[in-house]
Length: 114
Length: 110
Image (cartoon, rainbow over all chains, first blue to last red):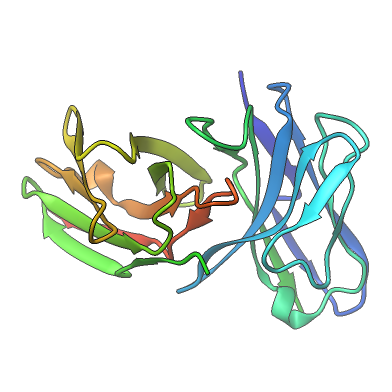
């Protein structure tokens, strides 16, 4: 089954404790992206990757890091989480960036930073 | 810059039609999309429209595009309780990246 898998789905952590949210897709997609969803703000892009070893900042990259060492994986790293990073995070992938390339989303990771 | 605006909430009765509206700023958008997010899940592509089209119909869904006013709408005929979700409008803009609106929560009352 084609899917984007994120882990963990739920996490409560404390300020400053490094964490990683993993994302894996099994569709051989080149494009992957991380978003955060906050009430009233919709989806905002954090980072994206056009291919292996190619990553770029989205609209809200501060406080986050990513890596793309393999095509299927695109982890999101919070080196020193802060309460304003409490949010619902989505990983997404697509075959191509533009046109009718559908974005496939993971089920989301709800992060709370105390 | 690129911006996509939606109203945040819409409530309808089961069996009525729902119309969700969206405005966007980037006239160079090639495709405009509607994504649906059900509770506790990620977004799923519902439908899309090419920018040189005025209308696209797919079963109960009708997408209308007014390119002059940069206005996009999604009409759901015979709305069912299973249609309750958050609906996101998105454009691909001049960077090719998808820009999402804030999402419209559709509440369907029995």
